[in-house]
Each structure stands twice: as structure tokens, then as C-alpha cells.
Length: 331
Image (cartoon, rainbow, N blue to C red):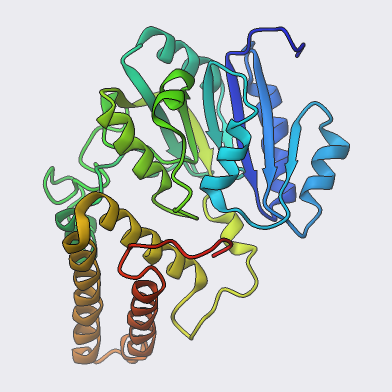
């Protein structure tokens, strides 16, 4: 791609210890670009598996940013955005692989729908099964339905399955609240107006927050099912060696809880953050009560894990001072 050529898309990838998947992802992108004028920018978050060296040696046309520390998802993407030149910005996880025509269709849909600021496609596993690809914003009600298990028990209920829109036909395009960052396309002109990711979110909730700001700026967020992306999910997390805090809590779960508190505090105030914490704690206590009453030794054994989850939630509350402050990176 020459320096003066008009670029349709800047594809941003954040890498953390997923060298082999990253290679597969980049090769897949090359195969499935389908005539789209694009550039690729990889931000390596201080991987220890040689990911950055692999990109430099095998993909010389890819722009590589080597991070000295793990910046997290939001801050790393922001660094890539600073040098991106495309009309559109595409986020692509290293464990996500484009199906035929995905990138071309993304550009065509955005060109044809100028009111859309951000959009996502249909995420599927390697077995072809649908993954939640378009969701409603988190709220106390939505969280309650998920934590209670009602969303899983009645996925076709428009009310009970509302959080993940599991009631909806996955083959029908629709305006939605938010789309996952595993694959999404954004209008550059909109991002220049509203800003990119809020770096207070290290991991989790950063794309939810961005979609709220997109909609607040009178732009739309859409789900387009003909854009199909194969997504494995959680591969970077699997590479973290020191996940366990106690027997039941994990560093990844602590990150999620911190981000949730930051999100609710930002968008729902002090009462929102406090209520979300109490609701989640109530859910754990309810699960503990059910397990205690069970005659299953396996369920009884989970009680310690539940207590560890409550302890992790309390730690997240302290670490963020009730959702007011983001801990220093890396989390």
C-alpha cells in the first residue's frame, strides 16, 4: 500500500501472547481482504511468546507497535488509532477469523448507511454455532435476569432473553445497543468527533462505553448478520499464568468486576455502582444458598469458590473506590 493511496480500512489488532493465533489471523486477513484497500496495525502488549518478533519477521508490511507493558485493550487500540489512515476503523481480535466477504461487506454497508457510526457482524464458533453478537446495554434489570439464570432458561423470551437478544433471529439485521469488540467497524469521522476508547477500562466494558457515546452522538449501532466472523474467545486470558487469587477467584474475574463498577459509576452514578455491586453479591449468596440445600457433593464443594468470588468483588470495590478510580495500568 503506497503512502498516498486512499485507504478504506485500518485493521487494528491487539496482541498478548497469542503468537500462533495472531499468525493465523493475519494470514486469514490477507486471504479475505477481497479487494478492500486496507492497512494492518498490530499493537503487542509486551507478549513473552515472541509475537512481536514473529510479526516483524513474517509480515513486514504490517505496522507493529511494541508495548513495553500490557496497556490493556482500550489503551493499546488508542495507540494504533493515532497512526491509522483508513476511512473506517476495524477492530479484530487475534482469535477472530473473517469468513468470505466479511471485510468487503462491512465497508459496503457503512458506505450505504451514513447514519451508522459503528457496526458488528455475526460471531460464530469454529463449530459454526452462533455466539452473542449484538446486545442490550448492561443495567440492573439485565444483570439480574442473567445472574438469576432466567435468561438461559428462557432464551426465546423477548423479556427474559433481552440482555443478549437471544430471542432475535440471528439472520435479521437490526439496530442494537452494542456490539462486541472481537470484530466491529467504526466510522473514522465519528471517532474523531467523540474520541476513541476510554482508557480507564483496561479490559471489559470499553466497547460498551464506546457504543453508548456513539449513540449519544446521534449515530446508530447496527448488527449485520451477513458479515460472518469465526471467533474462538478468551485466548489471551488462557495465556496468563498467574490467574488465581484464591481457589475460586481469578485475575480475569477481578478485571471484569472492576470494569463493571467503573462503567456503572460513569453511566449510572454512585447509586448505580453501589446497586450493581449489591446485586452481584446477592446473586452469589443466592447461589450459595441453593448449593447448601443441595444433596450433591459437587455443588456443596462450590461454596468455597462462591465465597472467593464475593471476596474478589469486595476487592474490586476497594480497588476502584466504588467505581470512581481506575487502578494504574497494568491492572
